[in-house]
Structures are given as structure tokens and as C-alpha cells.
Length: 491
Image 1 (cartoon, helix red, strand yellow):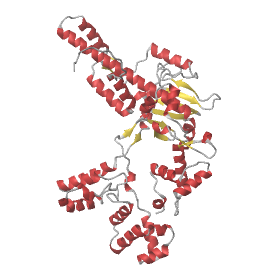
Image 2: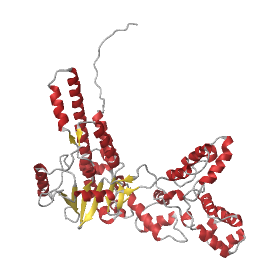
Image 3: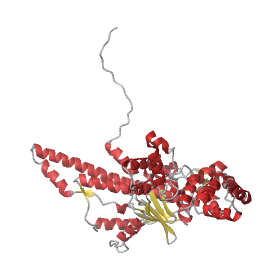
């Protein structure tokens, strides 16, 4: 066999992502708080970046403001060079929603002294997020006088609780065989923590724990536990006489016990929300002002970045010198300036993209902003992508972990995208999934009582409204709304 060496030429396609493109993708997905932190880090590490000490009024700024005022009412072409700030939509115009830019300058061209007040009001509208259930329990564990071994096991137990405050798996599997007695002591301790009823295997045990913590003991606690474990269904069916006889108490005593049971919380962990951020600052604001929808991009929360002119002049001076040290310093300055310019451009691109998407959402979800969540229309990423001439993945990135402040509350931007749910009238009347969920919430809220509506009954009521949703789908949507089943709601 003869082996010969030679050269060959072939073509192939290969996609390479530059560091600048990767950074652009990252900035697209960052929520406002993380973007602020990212910019702060860049400012501390890159001497080419500079922040003006104060907003200055220049002829260029005044001329740009006047130009925007002259173009008020004209259709926006979503060009990358378009300004971004506040826009006012007039939803009742025959040709559709028309908006006009709201400048930061007054009619006389002077700087708007109330701009900082508007920014402060916007930030004060941030959605406060509560501590997680695990954080709350860990804090109480840290305040308890226990041994290091008990603390370690307690942390394992708390970490294994789900959002309801119940064990995901048997806590006995978390410890070694010789630590079972210690585990029992730790479980008993955590079950005394706030909120009452946590560290249980299910809602039945949670109710019993709450009763025990309230001082119920002896025969009363035994009867209560039997009621919870074996007779809740009979009570919901109105079989009080049979239940009282089985428990060996009068119907009056049973009524007292049952009314007390209704004061307890079947899922105590639901009182807490989970999330890594202490506050959520909306990236976009859309509110009705004098009958029109006003759009505002919260870019005021970001510092106005620029290139440090003294640093640039130093680089120019060093380039004229011939020493090795000067050349190295000049090369460092050039790299810093390039990185700074890339960051400034990418932040501007992020804001411009977010503004484009926000304006398109106002156009397609006009009824939601005017009348509330139940008027959300089915909307896909592709529709918005086609509207603003961007790729669907870009729309997905810019919608992640960002919030929008409306007259109806603060919502994740991604909630404005929703699949369609068919109606009996035909596809032209389809509703969004989120709108149907809001209708289910309204139905449950309006019909709560001793006999809670079953999922099948809710499905039937939706069909009467022309909305075709199966029972299993109702159960799924109810779960996503964190609403208990009819069995638990009727307790």
C-alpha cells in the first residue's frame, strides 16, 4: 500500500460568533437591574468609558427635540436610527393607533425639570418581590438554639420543600440511618416555624400541624385529624349527621370543628413567592393619559455613556512616541476605546430593539392596555418579528426577564405572547390562553362558596360563553393560576 502526501482545497460553511456578537446577545436578555450592574462593572474596569456629571442642554439636543415635535403623528418606520423615549398612542383613530413622540423638552425648548420626577415615579412603581419560603425558614432556623448536626439536617429538610411547603420526597432518605432521631427533632422544630403548616407530606398533614400549633390536643386533636383524613368528602357532600356519629360528637361540635378547619391554610407555602431579585423594575411603561396610550421606555435608569475625551487624547499623544512602553500603552488605550464603543452601541441597540418590540405590542395588544388582561389576543413571536423586521430569536431574547408597567399591574413582557384557544363561533373569535385563564379566575371568584365549582362545571360554563376548553385544560390553567382544586376550595 502506497501513501502519498498532497494538498487539497475544499469549501464548507461555518458559523463563528464574535465576542461582540455574543455580548450583544447577552445584553439583549438582561433585565434592567442586571444591565445596570453590568454597565457599572464595565465603567469600573474600562477607563475609556465616561459618565457626564449632569445632563447638558445643547443646540443639537434642542434641534433634535424640535424635529421630533415636527414629526409628531407620523408613522414610525422602526428604523434603527429612530429615537426612543415616550410615545403617545391615540387608539380611536380610523387608521389604527397613531402615536406622537413625547419629548423631554417643553414647548419653549427648555430642559424639562420634571424629568427626574417622572423617572422617580416610574421606579417607585417597581414590583416588590417577597423573600422565598426557603429564605424565610432558613432565617428562623438560624435563630434557633440547636446543634451543628441539627442545623445541617434542618437545611437539608428546608431545601427539599416544594413551593407549597411540603416534602418533595421522604425526609428519611436525606439522612443516614443513625440520624433518624435527630431528624425527628428537627422536623418537629421546623413544623413550629412560620408560616404554620410547613414541613408536611401533604395538605392533610399540614392542616393537622396547624391545629396542633394552635393548641388543639387530646381527644379534640384526634377527632380533628380523623375528620381531615377520612371525612372531608362526606362533609362537602353535606353528610354532617353521619360524620358526627362516626366521630362520636354532636352536630354542633362538628360544626364548630369544621368552621375552625376553614380558617386554616391548606398550602402554606403559597404565601411566599420565589425569585432571585428583591425588586423588579419595569423596562417599559404603557398607561392611558387623557384617553391615549402613552409608551415610555425606562432608559433613564441607565447612565448616559460616552467616550472619555482625555483618555482618547492621551492615546493620540502616545502614538507619536516611538518607545516600546508608549506603543503598548497606546495599544491598550485603543482596545479600551473599541470595547467602550462596542458597549455603547450594544446598549443603544438593546434599547432600540426593546422600543420597537414594545411599540408593536401596543399595536397588537391595544385592547389589553385599554381594558385589561381578559382582552389579551393570541399573539406569537413570529407576528412581532415580521412587524419589526427582526428574527424570532431576537424577539424571544428581548422579551425574557423584562417587565411592563400598565394600568392593570406589572406583567412580564412574555405574558403578552399567548397561544390561541378555539371558540365555538369560529377561528376569527379565538381568545388567547392568558385571556381564558383570566376568565376562569373570574368565574371561580364569582362562584366561591360551600360548594366550589368543579373543573367540569367551569368547562361547561366556558362553553356557554362560546369558549371550547376541556376539563383537563381547565385543571391545567387553574394550576398555573395557583388556584386549588374544588375539593380543597370547598374545605
